[in-house]
Amino acid sequence: MSKRKAVFLGNGFTRALVGNVPAWGQLIGGTNLEDDLQQIIPYTFQYEMNYLGERKSDEETLKSEICRKLPDFSKVELKGAAKSFLSFLAENEITDILTTNYDGLVEHLLLSQNAKLISQNNSEKIYSIRRNYVYKYNEKLITLWKVHGDAVAPKSVMLGLDHYCGAIGKMDDFIKHGRLGGKTTDNPMEMKFPNKAKSDITKNKIETFQFQTWVDLFFVATVYFIGFGLDFSETDIWWLLNKRARFKEKLEISNEIFFYAPQQQKTETEAEIAKAKAEAEAKEKVLESFGVQYQIVSYEFRKHSANPEYLLDVYEMISRQSGC
Image (cartoon, rainbow, N blue to C red; front, top):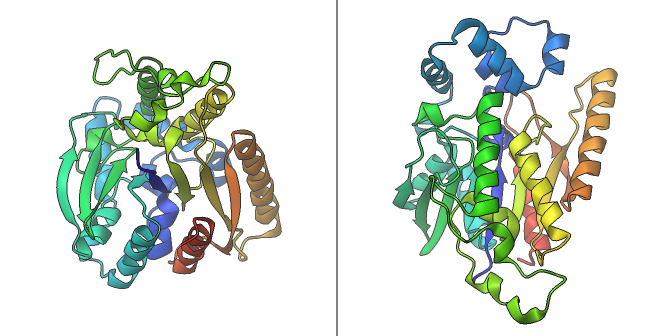
């Protein structure tokens, strides 16, 4: 099996390239909370409060309205940024792109540089364990996984606590039983790796690993988190990282995962800086306990304007680490 490398892109990736991109709170809206109170309540709960309080009978319409707030990147000139991103993918032999973003920025970047869409899997109506697009670029294949759904299928857009918990159930079903789309197999994740306590007779299992979902990548591929804040409300990703860490205790799992954290914004108040510093230190401690390598980037995110320097710094760090 060839070595797979994946980048995991969050909203910070979009904000690093395009100014005035709506944040979680702006997309959800409608909770009518004071700022201090709203900061305490996780986004997944804020969405539920909005849905249950105002739109409890028509969730698909609510999600469609949220999707309409997303920028239309087909009208944005991004050739320079696209060339930089695509060059990075090619030079580092990235095979997979995972993104929690519902928008079409990554697709636009790929297509603007003459990548060709050769296949797609949008068979899931609500969850997105297998949702992907396969592109051909420079004679190589790149698979784009829409981890939290796709704006072209509003019901799949993952926002609330109910959707997040349901997604964890789907991942757990796949990891424990190899079950996809209601079909049970005899290929759970635990059977795909040699057990550290047993003989070497099964050491070659990983060579025949079959990728069926983006969840597989967390156990086999090198994964680079870029522009993803990994707020503690992102329970599905935290759950998966924890599951991998638990499996590593007994199974021969040797892939590496890197998290690239930006510096704090210089324009924040002392209180905001202190809070952000404490949150970053807490996140670093948890990630390290889960076996994720925490990397600090030279540049910070910016709230309302693009900052491609953050991305360029991450690209350079990854290239050095991978020997490119």
